[in-house]
Structures are given as structure tokens and as C-alpha cells.
Amino acid sequence: MGLGVLGGVALIRLLDLFTPHEHLMRGYEGPPELADKVKRSWLVALAITIHNIPEGLAVGVSTAYHVELGFVTALAIAIQDVPEGVAVVIPLLRHRLVRTAVAVGLLSALIEGGAAVASGVAAAGLPSVLGLAMGVAGGAMLYVTTAELYPDIYAEGKRKAYPTFGFIMGVLLML
Image (cartoon, rainbow, N blue to C red; front, side, top):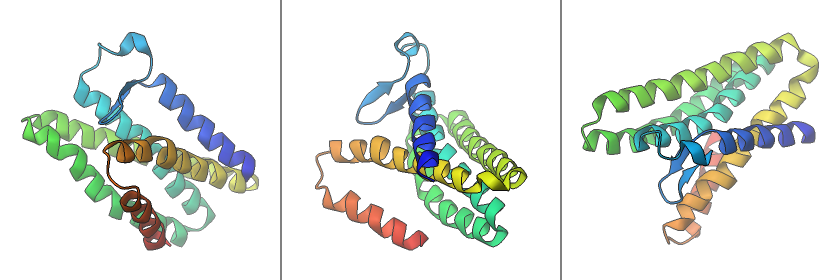
């Protein structure tokens, strides 16, 4: 399981390094040669997509373990995906980028769904690596939360209590 967690962290870290994307507070991340070649709206979309891969992994692996658990996991993730999606799409709609907003939503859903199907099929086909696969999904989600989301939240100058307790409440809600 520990190796799986490290594998999940490594997977998302590599995507983080090699996929051009942009955070609202920290700005551009990814290969320097692509910094001025991709529109900002797509860079934000790619950041959200990187975040959705671990969610798809979690749904796929938990479904391979037990269908009921997979449903509950998918429901918990869907609950938090709604406000997240709104938070991403509203600024695009404010700038009248309707096509981009729809494309961002579709890209995000397709990537998350693809990760769910791929990890579910792989884990179901190789039950002996199910624990490792669960670790990968967990490690990927931990990396996104601690390395990607928290620095952006804390950079706004708000007190750390709000995002920290929000994270804890989210975990409790999912449990």
C-alpha cells in the first residue's frame, strides 16, 4: 500500500511537471517552452483535469473492490465535483467563453471517467494488485490536495483555519 501511495504521488507529480497548466494564485506551471503557446483558459482546464485523474482512479479502484463501495465513492466525488465545476466554468462564462466552458467541462469529465474505467478494468483484471492500486489512487489524491490545492488557498492571505477545517469536514462528509 505504501508503494502504491508513492506511485500515486509520482504519477501526479510527473503530470504536474510535464503538463502545461495554470493556477489562479501561482500562475503557470509546466514545460517553459509551452508557457506562451496555450490559452489561459485551457491552462486552467488542464490544472482541473490533473486534479480529476485521482478522482477517477479512486472511483475505478473502489468499484473493482466492491461495486457498492464504488457507487458511494462516485457519489461522494460527484457531490464535490458540482461546486468545483461551477467554480471553474463561471469565470469562463463571465468572459463569454461559452464554447470553452463546455469544452472544459467535457474534457474534465472524459478524463475523470477514462481514469475510472481504466483503473477499474485494470484492478478487476489483476485482483492481486488491488491494494497497490488503492494506494496509487490515495497517493494521487493526497498529492493534489496538499501540493496543488492548499498552496493556492493559502496564497490568498486567508486564515489557514478555513481551508484546513473545510478539508477535514469534506473528509468526514465522504466517510
